Structures are given as structure tokens and as C-alpha cells.
Amino acid sequence: MTVPAPSVLDVVDVAALHRLLAAHRAEMVTDLVSYVERETPSDDPVLLAKGLAYLEAWLTDRLGAPAARTHHEATAHGDVAVLDYDGAGARLTLLAHYDTVWSAGTLDAWPVRVDGDVVSGPGVFDMKAGLVQAVWAIRTLRAAGVPHPPLRLVLTGDEEIGSPFSRPIIEAACADAAAVLVFEASAGGGAVKTARKGVGLFDVHVRGVESHAGLDPAAGVSAIDEIARAVRTLHAATDLAEGTTVNVGVLRGGTRPNVVAGSAAASIDVRVPSLSAQDRIDALLAGLHAHDPRAAITVTGGWNRPAMERSAPIAAMYALARSAAARLGVDLPEMAVGGASDGNFAAALGLPVLDGLGAVGGGAHARHEHVSVDGMVERAAVAAGVMAAFAA
Image (cartoon, rainbow, N blue to C red):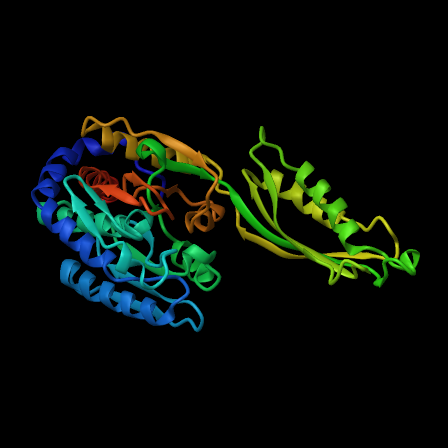
């Protein structure tokens, strides 16, 4: 199925959906506060399990029991729940992670606060408000008697650490979808995200030859010297005009000042805007070699997420969302961002993806994390319009 043309929204009263959502503004805030008060740090399986159980009970209360449910049990990470809801037309997949970067106990010093239009608290922007918006969008369509397509909601608990467990589940859940809606927080100015960089995480290891730095320096091969040369090569691969960055963020090596270092390592974060840039970095890493033939360089790691390029299907999803927002008098911007999300996996499958459909606010991963309640109502209406377009 192709992405519906924006004109399909002529038969969907997005403004009426917005008015209905606005009438339930207080309930949306209550739902959000209750959710944020459940701490779900990525590194705490016990709290993650409690958080997911809470969410599933809340979802059943708000949307009724799903038509189908699949639970994927993780060992070291948060579990994944895939919930299917019936509808008319081609299925949409909705992505939302429930883990946050905030450690257990953060709420003790930083409780959830509601101050007029602003709700603040750990995880409120990234991305708990997004899920609340998605649920209320669905609930409102039903209350208004507006058909929505079959919906598959994927709840993951390891997005903030790169989705090592959930990636294949996400890809399978998206594979046959007509489109994928990602309820991650919006970018600056409330922009949806139509391009995201790919992320590579690599380690460069150097094996040198130890020797006494004073008595027999020529017998040694300094792994630190070799890693320093490699760092210069790696940093030189950064191309800001292209949008590629290579950052050596951690260096380790040597044992004592009077020993020629026998080993060293560097940890690298790579961001690329395209597959061609990814290929260039792959070639660079494969070509790293030691200056001294007695030393050896090896590279481990890989690409955590593929780049999400602004494809024609993604552009079509943006046009549809922008049309829905325009019916509320809102000019919805778009943006390419350096961060990655689970939407990258769906985009790599060639699917129409709309990312950044979540909260309007700011402060992701920071102590000033906050969302706008008016923004929640607005974005829930836009999401409802987009969903309805696939069933119109």
C-alpha cells in the first residue's frame, strides 16, 4: 500500500479530533504523570518488568484487551511486548520504548511536576509522553467513530542502550506494515524527524611489544604510539559538510611510565548520514594498519543502527502529517538529526516512517526534561489524523 495522499484528510475532521482531545487534557496529564512516576531505567530489569506490567494494564484500561499479544522475555534487558489491535485497512506499526536513561531513585530528588502547560520529570520527553499521545489518539478516533487501521504497538525496554535485544523483534513487527509511526520526541521547534544518522560503535585494539623504556627501548613497540597515529587518522575522517563524525571518546593503554606500552585501545562513536558514508568509514577501519610491522591493529564492534535517509516514502509520510497539522493551523516542520532511534531499523527495510511524532518540549537526557501539554494534545490529533488516513 502506498502512503495516502494528503487530500485523503478531506474526509477526516482533524480539528474535531483536536477538540475532543482537548476536552480530555486533564486525563492525558494524569496518565502521563502516573507513567513517569514508574521509574524504568534501561539497566534495571526488575523495574523494567514492573513498568511494562503497569503499561499493559493501563493500555487494557484505555484501549481494551488487544486482539493478540506476544511477549518476548529478555535476560539482561527489558522485555518486549507486541500488542495488536483490530481495525480496517492495512496495518500500521507503532514504536515506543519504555526504558529511560535515568537511574533508579532519580525521582527522589526530581519528582514529576505539573506547572501550567509544562510537565517535567525523568523520561517525560524521551519518550513517555509520546506513548500517552499515541494511546489517546487511538482512543479519540474510537470515541469519534472514525475508523483506524489495524495497529501493532511495539513496547521495547532497551532502546536507550541501542536495542540489542529488541532489534530483530522490531524488524519482524514492522516487516509487513503499510507504514511505521515512531512516537519518539520531536526535534527543535517541534519538528518531526525525516532523517537520522546511522550509528557505529567500534573499538580499535593495538598489540605492541613491551620493553624497558630506559634500558632497552628499541626492543619495544609502543602500542600508545600506534594508537595515537590511528586516532589522528580516524579524526581526519570526520566530514562535517557531509554530516559524518568520527569521535574517539575513550583511550586506554600502557601499564607504567617506564614500560613501553604493549597494548592500547580506543573506543569510537561514528555517525553517518547515508549508506555511502557508512561504506567509506568501513573502508577506513578495514585499512587501519600499524606503523611498525611488529605491532598489530584489530577492529571490533559494528553498526548499531543504519542511517535513516529521507526517502520518497518518508517524504510522503511527512506530507501527510504536515497536512494533518495544517488543519489545526500549525505549520509542521521537519528536521534531520544526529541521534538514532528504532525508526532507523524500519527505514532500512524501505518502509514509510514518520519519526519524532511524540512530545513537544525539550531537555532529553537532561535535568530540564519537559513537555508541553498543549503540544501533547496537538500531536495526538495529528497522529490520529495520520492513522485515520490509512483507513479512509
